[in-house]
Image (cartoon, rainbow, N blue to C red; front, side, top):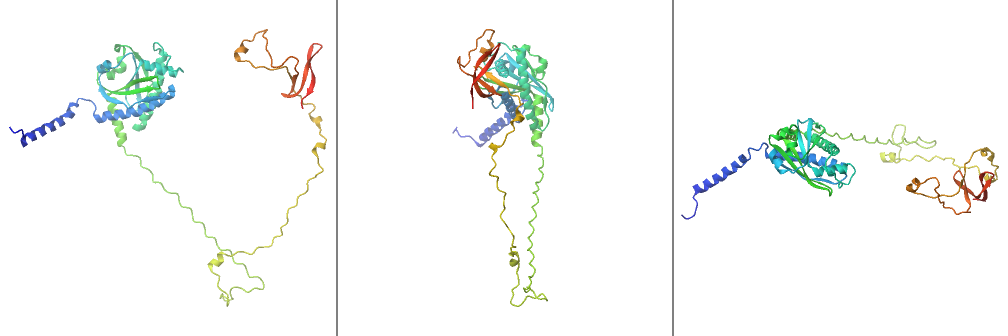
Length: 389
């Protein structure tokens, strides 16, 4: 043999390669969804979970990052073998627009961090075990997150989509899960959408979303029909009518002939000899004669320089009966709330005024005088020693 292939052998090899290429799709023919359907489910989940991440950020006040999902077909046994426990199953049912339900799976520690942040903590003071309060809090978080996802889904499908309030279950052993809540997933294959989730520096984990095959197909069908729908026709924009052109300014009428002056035209309408005809430009440039106006400067009455308000008699008797509040301030100090709460009978409060220093006399809160304390029979009084000017 010379090692060369004949033409028949080459054709046979090429034929086998074509057969192998044709057989490749048949190898995945058992998959319930086509690659195009899986891509569409991934795109839908990506948009919906992006909206949910924004909602979660507003709840925990931490940066939330959810990566682009990976979509695969899985079974219940594969899910059980590949996901650690304990975990939290969150069941979400659609009640309008779409028929079916999907399941979110979160790790127990991630739920503890999210609920602690929602309750005002810093995400580090985690409980030993999840309580009913934690499950209620994570249900509220998922309700708001998936509610915003349903709004995004409504925009994509051009159809109203609504969900029922989610329910959460802590699963330590796989036998504890209520099969009635995952009946559409338990004994059949389903779509698994895997996201990587980060919440600040506290969570670096994952989140999974499970779709029954029927729900995934329904989503794909509605998504495709909404994409293929004819876009709404845009109404032709009619430009506003152009404004009417400004009316031409009529030339002012020519003044009548003054007495003793000849007219521009003769009796027969013919121009007078030696006088040119007035053309249009001359008519537009006509300036009427300026009339004489008798204008005089305005005259004001002079001020009475002899008026002096200081010398005017003031009728202060009108306000003599107005009551004023007179306060004598012995001194001031400042104390903290803690110190004030420690006050008790017998507590001595030191003021900011030295013994023997004049005290303040205030009228309606304004300092007007200083004085000293005196005793009049059994009452205290104040002797004014200085008037504040």
